[in-house]
Length: 333
Ligand SMILES: *Cc1c(COP(=O)(O)O)cnc(C)c1O
Image 1 (tube, rainbow, N blue to C red):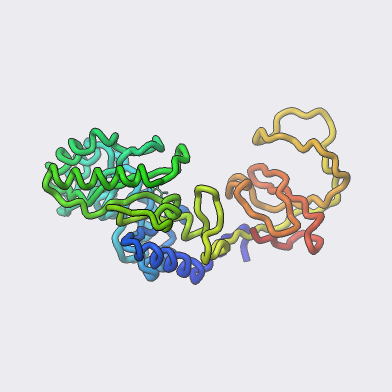
Image 2: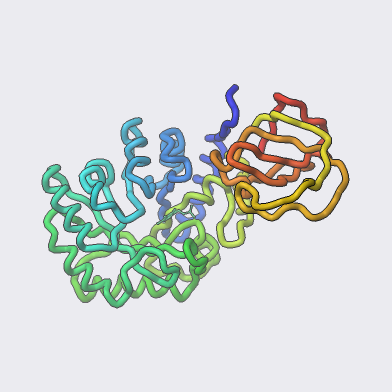
């Protein structure tokens, strides 16, 4: 088999998604399945739908198009504000998009009109993480203006926390979103169907037994795919954390000193060099690197320690591994 390769256990992903769908349903919250980390892999989209997610989502239209082309049914949501240069594709392949700019919504409306369809919009609200979002004081006026575009349907409001600044979802910011939904409904006389409270970082808050107010949707990627929550990066009870594994092949394995020798300057990626001399170690090189993945995010098997990586080489210490790794053997992360 070719290497490096990702092994994706669809049954485990189904279990993770189903478990979260069921737990959140008890709190009146639906799940939008986010497949962006898998570039919209259709097999994953289908499994998430079977597990009961109410929509699929990605932040790039290309990834939604991949699922559409493969015949994945279900509502497609673009969860990053559309690029003006892509509005034609967005209205054709996404049913709903997340928006913060009236210029974009205007262009979406024109594109939808030309395509003879309606496009759904969820307006994102800034609640402190300082990534995307309309400032709360401007939300009502933006909704009022967005409603004027003929081919746009306002589906709801949403927010996104814990991404850029790590601001945690809590009773306060979630209550603020609920209050905004209520006040827009009463002052503009419209119905806000979807109140999308956030991403995997919202799970602790949502399942804590706190009052979830108007929040009736979460968008989940990492928690389904990796079985862990992103605030402390702890495993979520009852979920598989190994639904996705990465296999890489050994291309060199030698007993070498733990410290480099000679004059040293910058490394390929500017990392710090080891300073503790641990004598000779079994240094193994795997044919994978920064070009394939973020090596720092890999969880090696017991007895293997990641020492460093360049674009195409992952260097590990396999001295404590249960076997001597020979060239051609594989390691699973
Ligand atoms: C990526 C993303 C998500 C999913 O986040 P996870 O932490 O993977 O659950 C949800 N909403 C938005 C807007 C995103 O960009």
